Length: 184
Length: 338
Image 1 (cartoon, each protein chain N blue to C red):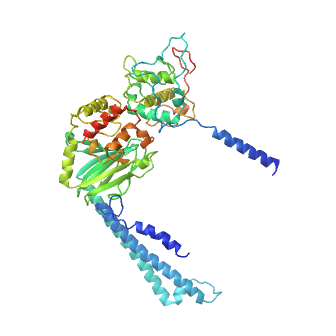
Image 2 (image 1 turned 135 degrees about the horizontal axis):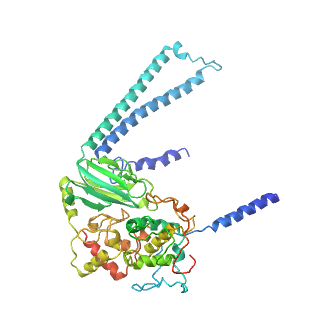
Image 3 (image 1 turned 135 degrees about the vertical axis):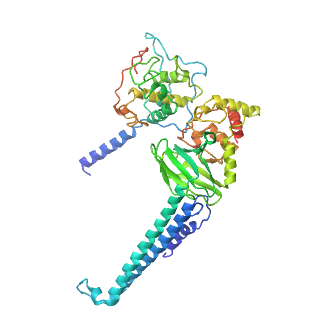
């Protein structure tokens, strides 16, 4: 066994180890959605003034953020629940656009989930009790992808429906301008 | 040891001797299937005769080769010197031509009679495939008689039915083996298939194009009835859901119409009007739950409503996590949807 052969064997083994670490995401289909951390009826405090210090993100955020199956299911729901009706495919219409850098109620995934669950003034309905938490978080994951927030290896390269915009893999990442100073 | 081959093949052959029609391409339960089976037998017989002749000819040739002298230069002109060979070759040519013409005529007539059935459409149904269930709509010139149901087809015997096929997401394939061949459902395109059922019975359909995680659990029940029974069924299905009377069912009604259920499902006669999931107006009258995943029963309804994701992982119906009292109420209400 030459030293060169041994070296390449070692490199191969290392590559296998490195590949095993590529656990990008997990699809939680069998597991029950994580329970509510906040009792129903009490809105989570997800808006804070510019000077305030943001609370730590919801522990559910890392289950859905950057999760390809969650974003794909979120995209389904986005069309089925007629989010398109007001927000179009991110460009906005009656509702504000979702693909720009401006977030009235915060652009962190837990803030978006709270916006969907609680509703917002001037037209945004509350989806609490109409969708499950799991579905709301999936929608939030997809909404974040409209402004290019997730990493490019997790987003879809092709939309589910006809779209005039560039594929999500080419969507530029918008710097979030929000009331909070948390890094997005 | 030499017996092993035939013994292994025997069960395969015997499994072909199954005359049940529930899901069989040899059922003959529809006009198209009957014609196609006749065509299949014609092809099989003619091709088998030809095959046997070719094999016999080859065997004879091999045996003759042993008798022939070695080192003979092939001239390719044997037939000229051997009159019996010449006659044989001409006969073989005629036989091949006759066989091919017979096959062409047989397939032409089968094709024509299938096209005739398609032209004499009497009933129009639209089937839309979704991941992983079938949305069924009975069309009628009168809007009040248009009917939406799911995962179950009721057809009158002897009436040509034209089924228009759509897909909402990916490519699916409509396949009821006992009644018709496969037809793909392609998103953004309209396809159709015509069926003339000839035999009363219950048949199983299945998506025949891999369409995602739960492709295997995308089945369809086809119920072929007499025309009178079919009209009775249609009339019953047109009725909106009756209001529940029992207190438990009323609690379920309130949950279903105001909670998560109504976001996707519609129930005729109530405020539940979602069109994302299957119509539930007469859910309890169907034979199966979740596109043929489970037979309809109280226990299965409980299991399905409480945790669809452990029964059909990946399906679009989410696990809501109902509390026991809510679950009892919802199932009590769903059972009234006869």
